[in-house]
Amino acid sequence: MADNRTMAQMLQAPIEGYEDAIVVPPINANNFELKQPLINLVQSNKFTGRQDPHNHLRFFNKVTSTFRHPEVPNTSVKLLLFPFSLDGEARDWLDKEPPRSILTWDDLVSKFINQYFPPSKTTYYRNEIITFYQKPNEAFNEAWERFKGLLRQCPHHGFSELHQLDTFYNSLNSNDQDALDSAAGGNFL
Image 1 (cartoon, rainbow, N blue to C red):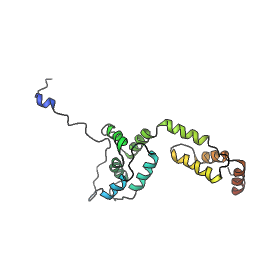
Image 2: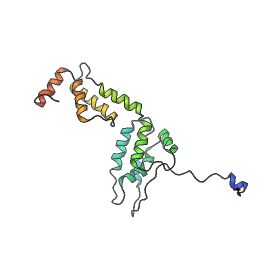
Image 3: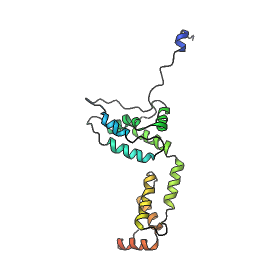
Image 4: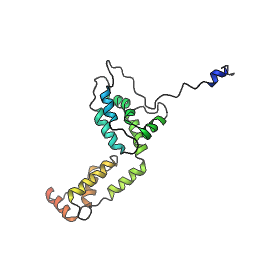
């Protein structure tokens, strides 16, 4: 088939391919708008790609949970606001995602975490959790806080609560194990 476009038409820049990666479902609510103070609050803690992505998501979820509209799902609000929470390298990452490739909040979280918390990092933290031990002269509460910190750094570690308690208990020195057993009225586990 012959191309009947003029030279000027063929040299024009394309008008396709400028859609965002995030597809926000249609919002059919009356009087719905994102207020500037909410956008400002989201922008007060921008993720650049150098911070902990889990902390960013926790903060973002906390902020977006403060906004309620009876006719608008919270996930739609999150999809609308998330680009405002990114800057620098992270904004570039989102802009490079294929158009219309993020259809749900879960899609976005999955892509975001996989980008900024790769499987190798998950493996590293899982190993740190499994091989955790109480340091010499470390108080019980210090060891507990350090252990909880490891769990917070990798919330998708996949260990059951029982496995976490077992790992922590077995990492303690005998005095602290005895204290836990006593407090439990028998064997802690």
